[in-house]
Image 1 (spheres, one colour):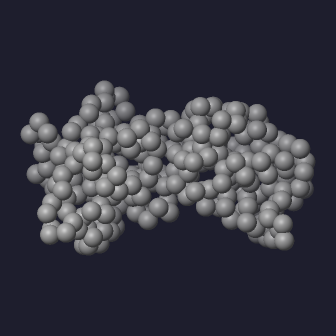
Image 2 (spheres, rainbow, N blue to C red):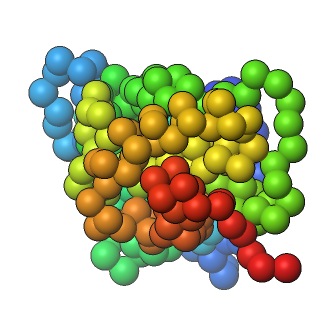
Length: 270
């Protein structure tokens, strides 16, 4: 789960690998302006810093661009001021952890999975922290509420158990959740500290609906109804925003059927 920590040391190594190939024909550099909403701490008034970036790798991601900026202590912004270190979160750099989630041109996405080439024609890209979570600094937000919500719902197993093979496709899909918060960012019903936990709470719950013993299952059903079913307005804004491509609607339908209507949690027909 993303912890809101600053970039890890391994990121520099990965960046060098990312920048080693796929350059524009002839090696001619490309330029783009990164517009980053910055603040040194939560209490500071945010300001927009425009940073011109010259790069050669046509496949460079937003994450790699941020690393390039931080690797150059002499990097200047559009006003000739020293940029300094841009604070942001990253870990795996392979679209597997969700740590680098941020708003990119107004859309919640993973920085490691968003290429600068998408914005080449416009020549600018706006980077902002997620808005549904407290800002720590620059692009780093505090997503600890996600873990707190799972603890509140008692999403854990007290003994090892096997999920029903007939729903393995559903539980596998639910297990791919990165807990990045992108789905919550676009959800009109979610806010940090509220009783509705959104899809970031529904997906882990869905994994347990077929595996828990009946006694524990009843507790989960009650918690699911309180923190998921009763707060979901079915806007399905989360349906297409998930970086992992999880079928939110399908899992929501099956989970509601099991937890609310007491129907069997079903997967694909054999």
